[in-house]
Image 1 (cartoon, rainbow, N blue to C red):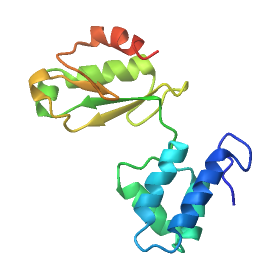
Image 2: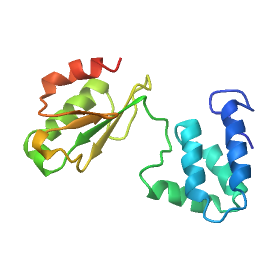
Image 3: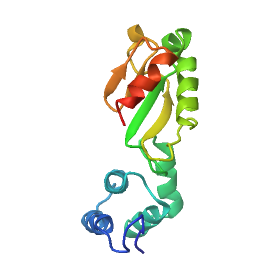
Image 4: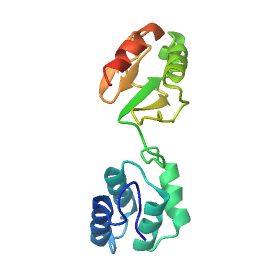
Amino acid sequence: MNCNCGGTAESTKDAALATMLAEYREKPGALIPVLQGAQAIYGYLPETVLAQIAAALHLPLSHVFGVVTFYTQFHLQPRGRHIIRVCLGTACHVRGGAAIFTALQQHLDVNDGETTEDQRFTLESVACIGACGLAPVITINDDTFGRLTPEQLPEILARYA
């Protein structure tokens, strides 16, 4: 069973997955490294890929799915090129984090955990970024922006065009 994830039936991604599955097929405890590898290959974990992993590792698909949905590092939907994380922790909340989050939702036309139609941005709320002195704070990929107002957001997002 090959994943047809936007390419030919035997794409480069499918070949990379097959190589990785062959390497891990008989190794105990291989599920999480295999899921991480598959996500690195595809950018997320399509259902067909989960089925291939389950079959190759001789695991029930329900078990594989349970692991994927338990750990927040795994994603079942395609993600944007740029991941925006909005802190909604106490310090950010008190200093306007909710207004920042709402402004981003409106500007990008997405809800929490969703990706824009152009696959440019994925928006996520988080409990803490660890930069309370800069509240309210967002990160875009590895860049941190603090002491924000909703009015600053369009200019910041334009940097990631």
